[in-house]
Image (cartoon, rainbow, N blue to C red):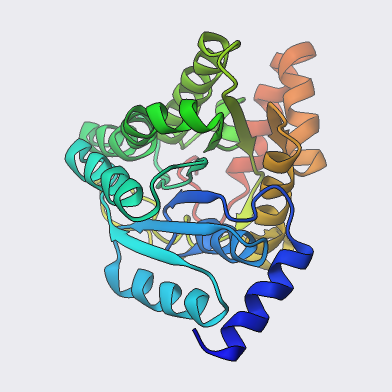
Length: 287
């Protein structure tokens, strides 16, 4: 190891918290919130397992983090495939011997009315968003229980309220929340920490890859990304919640905390507000 890397590692240790030398798996790590999570964890001295479908982007991120003194591996992983998730966890354990944190971040979105959408689009969202979380958690769980570690699911405000035009997306995020909340209760006395994190609209590439009614990629986002919370800020708040071992994290006030409050006490009002808000999008499917 050269002197530069030694200095970087020492500097990280001086600023590290509970993630120092912990083994952290991040799915969907090649871009957006996942990439930002990797960069935050790297600064905190974690050892990383980077998982995503885009091997080229993973390799580039891995090299960048290694240059900064972060020990990591990357594994090309399609989380909709159980065998990929199992193999990824096995490679993580083969390299590092344990798993301390699993962040289920991989996911895709959609934008189409249910009456127009092809059923395969809903199935693809459930396979990646929900089943990807289930598969990765299933195979990582024995190691997380042994290390008394943490499992996190990155959902969305769509996991608390029904977002019109996003039936498959909301369904998958509700399902993840139900799955992880139940997992928390099942392991109440096992030392497992479970975090469900719900960002509001975040400036990331998830909307660029959102599926349309026929399953094609949307390409252009209909929203003004400049007014959204950045992926970097979102990642910092998620990692802070992990370090504090919080149960839930709801980000942004209006689209997040206020929406969840209204869903409990004024659900009909929220339905109207959600419909009107989403209908204002450029080229909204409601028009």
